[in-house]
Image (cartoon, rainbow, N blue to C red; front, side, top):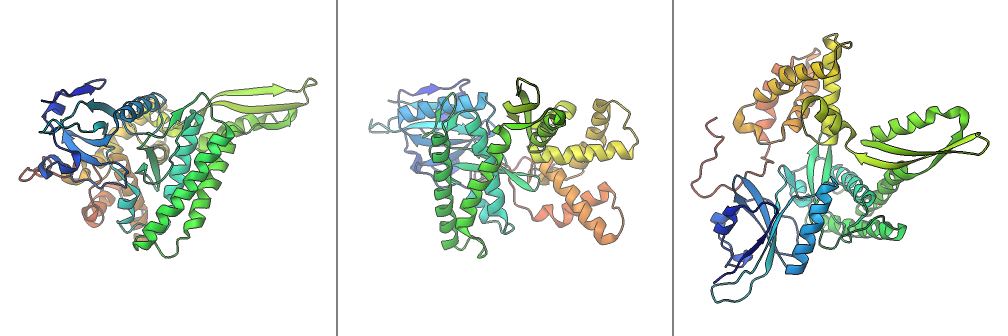
Amino acid sequence: MQNLQITASSPDPALLDLPWSIPLIEWPDEVLAALPRGISRHIVRFVRLSGRVIAIKEIGESVAYREFELLRQLRKLDVPSVVPVGVITGRTDANGERLEAVLITEHLQFSLPYRALYSQSLRPDTATRLIDALAVLLVRLHLTGFYWGDVSLSNTLFRRDAETFSAYLVDAETGDLHRTLTPGQRNYDVDLARTNIIGELMDLSAGELLDEEVDEVAIGDRLVERYDELWNALTDAESFVDAERWRVAARIERLNELGFDVGELEITTDIDGTSVRIQPKVVDAGHHSRRLLRLTGLDVQENQARRLLNDLDSFRAAAERQNDDEEFVAHDWLSSVFEATIQAVPRNLRRKLEPAQLFHEILDHRWYISEQAGRDVPLPDATASYVENVLRNRPDEKSLLGLAPGEKDPDEDQ
């Protein structure tokens, strides 16, 4: 007889219906969701539960509780990471033998492990874009005082973010949260990341999944370069003469361009007032996504937000509404441009991409066919062309995959 113990902030009763008396590796196909899995040292399975997909990982009990708590803290700090659902202990098999505890997290919709991305014939610079995303994630983690201890592509999920990717931490079992990190802790994480990435890319190359022109060592070195560049931009002190105070605003604008808001600056002057020294004290990621959320209620990735805000600015200029209240213009753009475009896509095809990514790609397609036609193609026409010539051939990237045998996709009749 099992004596299951479920630790969760809001337990889902449907969890009790899953076959906890069976080792995870033996769970039947009808229970599982057919999602691409990355490489893991533990057994991981995806399951559809109460209209969502969860990831279940068999792991030691003490480690499961520790990782659950770390993920909860990272979510409170607004760090890109998977959402912890709970921990289940007290599992036994039919013979009463003890089974491993499990950690349950929500599967991140529209995300893919790096190996699945490389199986899709992406552009040769995909490796570079993934590394850039991982560098941003690592800097954000270190700014919050999180020491990862096992940085790799395998422990990361990636979501498309306009022309780039956004990276999310998946595995936190080796991590630790501190008030601040020492340079040694940060350097260890970065050096380990470089070593792991080079090895992972060499493994892809051996499996003929990596473009022949990709230099694995150069990509690993790029992670270090991008990390150092971003870390220095966010944390370095800057000194200038008193007459160059405009550089304070320029520093803030530069950080905004990198996608970061500055909540607090430390500004000091010399005794005689001839020079000024500034250093960011509080830096938060998500400058553009927060602005878009405030204006429209759309909660999207940072570069997607940047692209949507650019389109909103173009809409405002075309309508000659530069003097109107920004919130009113944003409301009109949201309903007449963004939502109208998404609704013009057949519902059974919308799930292939996030709405913001879908809109971004339609804008890209509009630019492409307008250039070919030598004229400005209206957005509705560009949308129809994109649906017919591009989207129908795209693989689904939503997490609602792996329907049970005989189960009908709820979107098919829409």
